[in-house]
Amino acid sequence: MESSSTEPPKAIEYLHKQVYENSSSKCEAMVIREYKKIGSGAFGTVVEAVLQPATNENDNVGDTSEDVNTDQLNIDEEKWLGPFAIKRVPAQTDYKSRELEILRIVNHPNIISLKYFFERIRVKDNKMYQNLVMECLPSNLQKEIKYYRISKYTIPYPHMKAYTFQLTRAMLYLHGFGIAHRDIKPTNILVDPSKVCLKICDFGSAKKLEPNQASVSYICSRYYRAPELTVGSSVYTTMIDIWGLGCVIAEMFLGKPIFQGQTPELQLREISKLLGPPPNSFFFKANPNYRGNMYTTKLFTGTVEERFRQIFSNSPPDAIDLLMQILVYDPEQRASPRRVLCHPFFNELKQKDFKVYPRGSQEPITLDLLKFTPFEWELLGPYQDLV
Ligand SMILES: Nc1ncnc2c1ncn2[C@@H]1O[C@H](COP(=O)(O)OP(=O)(O)OP(=O)(O)O)[C@@H](O)[C@H]1O
Image (cartoon, rainbow, N blue to C red):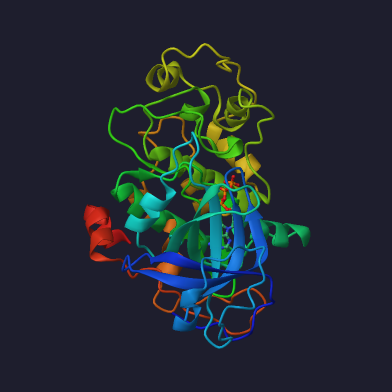
């Protein structure tokens, strides 16, 4: 692990004696310095921090709280590890988060990696919190989309392709374990624009789905919810993430979310404005007990293909073709991650001399996008020759 080169600004600092290293499960005492809030959501707070193993001289100091003066701690400014992102979530809630469990299993270049974890009581409210110490990325896809939208551009196509490819690779891997992320959206997709590198974060809603086992349908942020979720399906598959993938690709091209339902019920109406009325078979398969609006009236003229061309009028034909294979009502007909990875949309990336210019840089870089692991090759199966 790299040591941070510049000294981070001083803020909250504490010693915690039971910090577990994820890869070795080794428990050690660490000094933690938190200095910037980088995110907060429905479940927790994310702060940027650096850590360093506590020296023996700290042995006599008990676990310190963030409110006490930590001058008593022995700190070596040269020895900080990080920066990391620490996600802090209440340890005991009614909602079952499998985040730690799942982050401990996964290991993929396009999935955020967990470095350490620990539980700790916060002085502020005297409650136990779970702390997940992860690698830290400087931006997310929502910020990237916004950055370009402000100057009336979209993310450059080669970058879009590279990001989409990495996101799909992460899904191929996760779905290979049967794990659905269940909250795919641009803020949960971290990027490092200087490396054109992407990693999925926020596994707070993720779950290993078992065939025919019911799961809650009220999952996933509204704009990115698959149509089967909007009608209350409880035996959905990992294909709900593929719908999210389609929404994210569409958002990169449009600069704004494609389906902006004003209420959960109206979300399906927004989808029908692109895909036409959902067929009866869709309701039957997704939820035969659905009693809500079925949006049977067609809200546009012409064919669905013409509708796609109209909405994505500035996008290249291969991108439109890819979106048409992903944004379909029937989850069984939706393109699988391996089908997506083989799509001609990515042909440019597969050229030997493919290079990208990171934002603001005159120096092109090569990306190792096709370095699949044996597990990924296995998952690609007969599609291997096409990627
Ligand atoms: N490892 C990380 N590096 C950098 N930023 C991060 C990291 N993890 C999370 N973030 C930022 O913090 C935000 C909140 O994190 P996260 O989504 O995990 O929390 P949450 O409570 O589940 O949020 P939400 O309710 O929005 O889903 C993310 O949208 C992301 O932008």
